Image 1 (cartoon, rainbow, N blue to C red):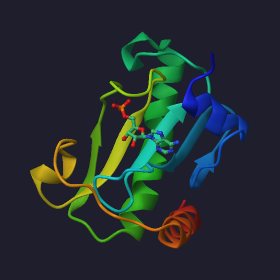
Image 2: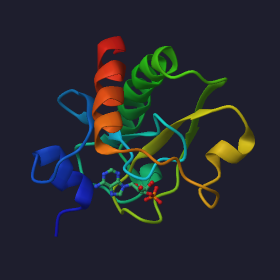
Image 3: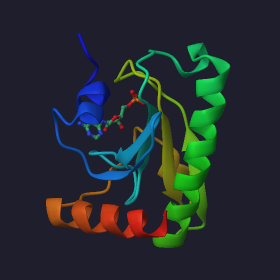
Image 4: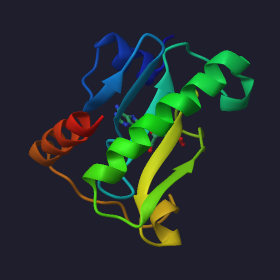
Length: 130
Ligand code: AMP
């Protein structure tokens, strides 16, 4: 069965898309640690990040670098943090999270609350800076 991220990439379920190319797709996390929390995913469906072939792995990091720069231009923050978890969705991805303090990257603390309109506007703003 396809992962939820493959369904997003194929357009079978909606996402707040930021950018994509032939091999990678970036979109806002639906349950963000902070506003602007973004997931960057290879279109190739492989469970664990460190099991990706090296071309996809390095390509993902290059694509994430561009997304992080767009994110940093858009969202007021000290910097963009990057982390790998993968406990919920078995499709390799990195989290890019605008952070001001270490707790912003902690997945067990309070989440940012955002409404649909705010997700749409934020994704569009990040897209413009990409
Ligand atoms: P993990 O697999 O532990 O790295 O976490 C997966 C992340 O994907 C979580 O932060 C979820 O909020 C996020 N997520 C799950 N489903 C969706 C979705 N349909 N759209 C956007 N983000 C999602």
